[in-house]
Image 1 (cartoon, one colour):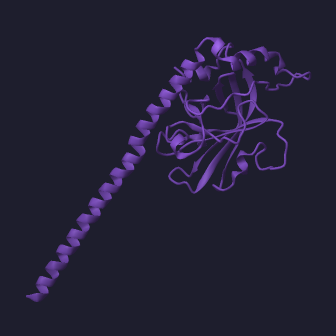
Image 2 (tube, helix red, strand yellow):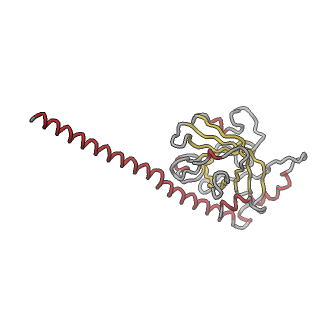
Image 3 (spheres, one colour):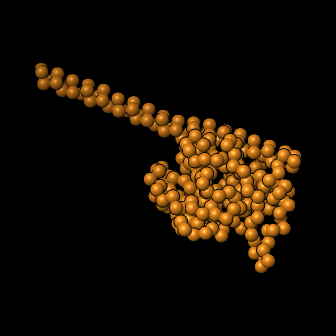
Length: 253
């Protein structure tokens, strides 16, 4: 009889353990759903509100947007003597809160857009937009306008960054105009390889003579073990008074 009692007790222990494991598994799954889905909804709402505030700022009278006026006044310096394009914008002032620009990437989605805020700390990135590395350049400046964004959770703004290919266009709408960048390359690095956001990526001592845009996000999709890097080079600029690129119109609709 004792043997039967022992086996019965063992079966009950196994049963309770199994139920506990199932419960923990369900709780873990619910946490993953919350982490991806719920934080995403909240971040998307925050990002949209930030974009709306930025568009409202652009619609203010020109007297409130001195950088725009100055940039338009310098439109004639967009062409060098040899006919090649040369960016000549006013420096866009970094802001402590709110968007400094909005990025559009048709290759990621026809209506894809993301506000750019100053900083790459968790609090900034968790708002669902892109964060500007403070020590990197601004759009149009010689050097590297480098930004970061989540690939999973909190709106996963750069989830599809791997869809960008050489030749794809990325547009940046700022207070002083529309910047058009063309993707040149994408590759994967380790998190500590910060040289990818230098003015000349990978060349600490080099003097920048081009204006670049760099997107950085986690890689692979469900891990932060590596970083996916995409570089694009500035190929065009126009003032806000000019017709907006089609991708900007589509993304902002």
